[in-house]
Structures are given as structure tokens and as C-alpha cells.
Length: 153
Image (cartoon, rainbow, N blue to C red; front, side, top):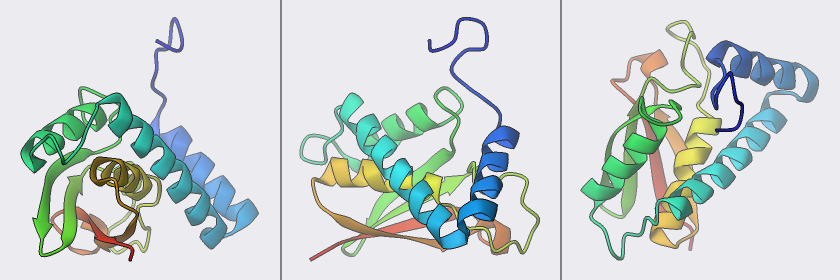
């Protein structure tokens, strides 16, 4: 535990205030780059801690372990609903993401930190450099916040 009384977690309200403050100070693009990059670093670290590898595990097992670590029994970043292959792309369906929390329907907010965390984990799992995109949003009519990853060649 990192803090004796308050524990390891803080509020979404405070984290989102930090995001909007960064956007005000740095601009939307620079903030998105910083948050995605920091998320990727965290995701890689998480996958290493969990010893996740597609070489030794099924996608179902990887989904279960990442979902547990990031979901209600873990850090509560998001719920990882599904991870699967669609052709050569890795598709990750998430819900209750940190980034979408509290946003009004129709908001143009993109998941940056959450995308980055999943991205870093997928790179660590596959051992490949990937390109990640947030392709569907619960804020714009989607059933999930969907992240797609394709190998950079």
C-alpha cells in the first residue's frame, strides 16, 4: 500500500481535473501525447508484473488477468470486456473508462491515458511495436470504448 490511511487510489474527479488543467496549460494535442505515453508506460509495467505473454497464454487468459488488474478488484481504470483478434488487429472493448467518466453524450473526449495503458500492455504481451487507435466511444453511441492495435511494420 502506498498510503497508510488513504490507500492506493484517488478520485476520478481529481484525475480529470489534472487532465483539463494540462489541456489548459499545454493544449489538447500535447496533453493527449503525454497521457497516452504515460499510459503506455504503465501498461507495459502492468503486463510485466502479471507475466503476460501471447506466447504462453490464450487471449481469454490475458483478458481475464488484465480485466482483474484494471477493473473493480484492481486499479479501477476501466472494465476490460473483451480482447480478441480481428484479422491482424487486436481489438479491446472496454467500459466505464476513466476518460469517459462524467462526460456528456456527444462529447468529443478521447480516451488517452486508458488507451495508452491498454496499448502498452498489448505491446508487452505481443512483443511487438503497435499502432493504437480509439475507434468507438460510449460517448458517441458505441456500446464500448474500443481500442484497435495493429503492428507497426
